[in-house]
Length: 227
Image (cartoon, rainbow, N blue to C red; front, side, top):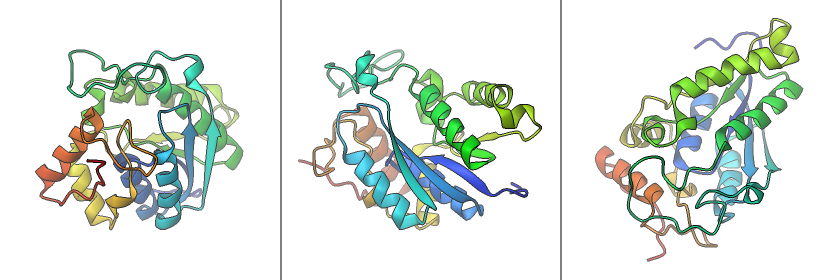
């Protein structure tokens, strides 16, 4: 993947394992990484604290946290008083946050314009898009087209690319790649309802997928569990 004359990139960093691997991939590809996390009203702050640790540990150029309170919209187990399910159900999960990735990519796009960055990196992947409509390759491709129609840079002949390097990867492949990149996954928090110390519940869908990924990869699970 060619860097071109401008190596600056905005990397959406949640504090979970997927976005951490994406940050490491961008750094390994020679990008100057501006990490961006969103405080959107999620159930806990542990993942944002993890994001700060990860940005520093991996060597991001800088790390910003923007506030957008999606609790005012609700409609998700992550932003409203709706129980987080412990077993996967049919259809789109109740943990889907309406328009979250569209909003996050839009904020990243604004920052990219200001920084004159030519890339936005995001950690959507094949495991997620089976349930979340805004994690599909079609969505990423459509947002890239929008970004180049709706921005000064795009219409001035300086196109922006959305990089989603984990799109076709399973959680096991992501875990393996993270180990290859030297990531300490103990720094990351993936649980939908982690406690104040960042310990995972071990029961939610995010915990289940994460644990299965480490097991399938033959990698010891470094997750700190509350029980």
